[in-house]
Image (cartoon, rainbow, N blue to C red; front, side, top):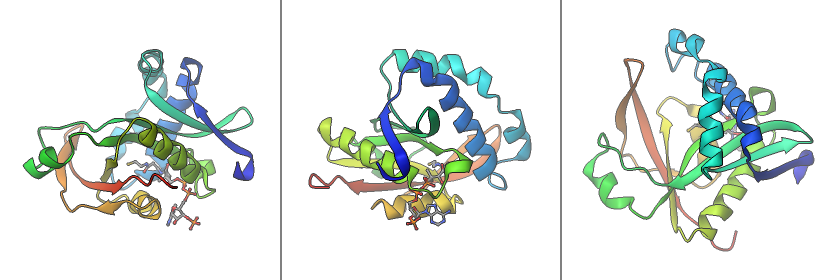
Length: 182
Ligand SMILES: CC(C)(COP(=O)(O)OP(=O)(O)OC[C@H]1O[C@@H](n2cnc3c(N)ncnc32)[C@H](O)[C@@H]1OP(=O)(O)O)[C@@H](O)C(=O)NCCC(=O)NCCS
């Protein structure tokens, strides 16, 4: 793959690297969007066992690496219905896939890693028989919104409110039809 980056299915042994990239990307990309106190209190070590259990439980996570150096990951699965979402979302999304998490290490961003992960996630969605895929993205996360737009997602303008550690936030629903020929 381009730049020596390869993408494979994650195993339990990837739990620590996945948790580390998750926390690093939050601190780097969410500064100014999420309260500093919340970002400072993140602890990758506390997430490792949860990730080990999820991966042992066959979570669909794909990791991008260059050699043994993990650069990013994407987690896929069925679209999760939430009580906060508008009724239109609940009516529209049954049978959709969702990108549950998408994180590239700050030191590897804007090098095509996210695009490589998206291609693998897209293939997974098609292989599972999905026809549409959606995701929730923080409304102020301009970089991610541009990235998803570059992957063919569009803003459905069905924002929902949610909270992290008492902070009120807004997230956007972005989605696209899967493309069997890509
Ligand atoms: C969003 C994210 C996964 C993108 O991954 P990436 O590896 O940096 O993206 P790529 O290098 O594959 O970029 C592909 C395209 O996306 C767009 N894009 C990516 N980063 C961008 C940026 N900083 N500014 C503007 N456009 C950007 C561009 O169109 C880019 O193509 P180009 O470089 O040829 O112009 C990464 O920035 C990230 O991990 N962000 C922090 C976590 C996050 O917000 N995740 C989303 C949670 S919903």
